[in-house]
Image (cartoon, rainbow, N blue to C red; front, side):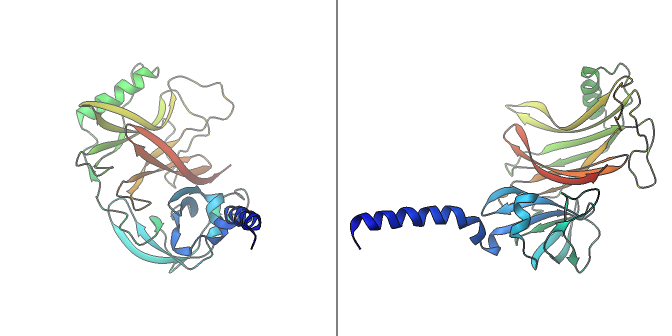
Length: 277
């Protein structure tokens, strides 16, 4: 083959590889992450890269094996079908059916142990963390906030031997519905929800906010349902030894799950899923 034809052939081959490489990803390199409680595909990993649900769904053909986890334990394994639309009113949400059927936890595709370190629960009455929450709320306009911590979890997220602390706090004047979600359609003065990470940075404690919504006074917004957020799981979702944080949120007619990844003293919202009006 003449030299110039070889060059043209190599260029064309490179272009074809770049176009078709996503379709040629090995099934072993594609790992979905599903919130079983929400029955939605949050996203996953393909060839070592984070992908949101819309990009990952076409790569999942069904028959993938998943390991199931709650906040503190592994529940076993199951097999997932290919993702499908959840239908109205959440057409964009992708569902994954499992066999055997499962009803709880986070399903993680892949063969690594996604729970290498188990979160330890601390007392929600701890005065030091109550003071931290109070200080955050005062900075957001609360004069006499009602402190209601719902979770305090201690866990080494990045495997460096130093534990971080995850704190969830929510106050809802309107109370909760029968399914455990917020009952009110409009936030009331004093309502809030908050999930934050407390981490030592150069020897000083730093509070890194994951999720927040504050209503120190009456809102004039026509549609402002209050939220409730908490940590659903802390898992190594891509097998790199570092643990991601899955936060579950609920409001009057909807719910969601979001994945957060710690990078130094910053947190990235990697992807998530949910359904609501």
